[in-house]
Amino acid sequence: MNQNADIAILVPGKLHAHAVKRIGERFRLLEVDRAVPENLTDEMKRSVVGIASSSVIDANFIDALPNLQIIANFGVGYDAVDAAHAASRGIMVTNTPDVLTEEVADTAIGLLINTVRELPKAENYLREGRWKGEGAYPLTRASLRGRSVGIFGMGRIGLAIARRIEAFGLPVSYYNRRKRDDVAYEYQSSLLSLAEAVDTLICVAPGGAATEKAVNGEVLNALGPNGIFINVGRGTAVDEDALAAALRDGTILAAGLDVFADEPNVPAALLACENTCLLPHVASASVHTRQAMADLVVDNLISWFSNGKPLTPVPETLTVQGS
Ligand code: NAP
Ligand code: 8YV
Image 1 (cartoon, rainbow, N blue to C red):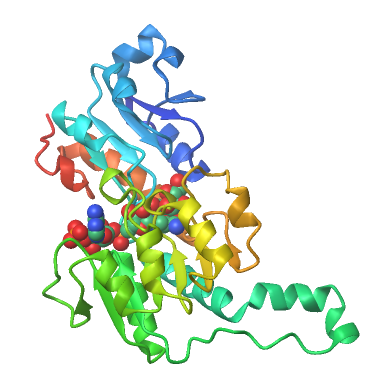
Image 2: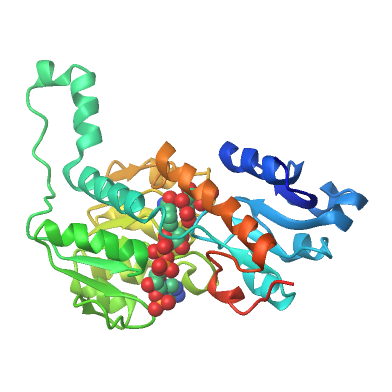
């Protein structure tokens, strides 16, 4: 039953079908194909009080909706939403932490092993009939054995990755802006010193201005010629030109990337590198986990419009109050 037909929730662009269905059952669902002010009718501008989205929501779009109360982001990373601007306007922003943590950590480990042991390439070799024709697949230059792993972004997912790496018998260290007092892993006070200390760097840091191109030529140089770089955080945290150059000239050994700065556009220079393992942003992309993320998006809206308390507010809007 639609209990809140007077509460208008806007879905700009594509959103998980389960979330759209639940919003339609519970609220008045409005849809536009892109989050740009030109797409809003006068009635939408007056009535929209909530947004559910996995699209870019910028300050202009927020300002075009004078009665907006909440933006429920599909994804734990909310760099596509101008949360600072939303906070300045007293608008709540929520994300989808925890429900995807283990899935993303599983994928990060899969990507790491595929990159180090070249499993996708070895499978292609078999499928192309080359095992029969040419003999055994060449021994991989890299191994996980003897590696030391650095995690850039030891948050929820970083910790889940670290636990898995520990089970592989490899030492873990990390860089965050703040040292954690609840983990025993070695802390490095800069990304550069982390890269100097390890030969395997896993980025699971958020996007946004603070991490823009943080993994740059200097960091990759510090990682060294045996270096493996894995990114399941955000593509914007990497200088992709510097990464492609480092892969080309042997500054590092190989990279496994699930995320890119301008998705779905993957730089030709990275595609051209033999020593990359590239995935189309699939770290959370199972039916199980995407359904849980969709539920959390809608449950945040329901909680907000029932009692003014979101389930998972982002830090920037922690003090925003419901009416
Ligand atoms: P989280 O718990 O908030 O962890 C983020 C970690 O990054 C924190 O430990 C934080 O520590 C650190 N950090 C943030 N800004 C930093 C900066 N400027 N410099 C250094 N460290 C910084 O978030 P999470 O749930 O683990 O998710 C992390 C990110 O993974 C998301 O934001 C998203 O971008 C990405 N992600 C990708 C996928 C995918 O499909 N590939 C799926 C889910 C998530 P400090 O605050 O102490 O610096
Ligand atoms: C999703 C993600 O693929 O949660 C995140 O931050 O990057 C992924 O889980 C993405 O948010 C879907 O839009």
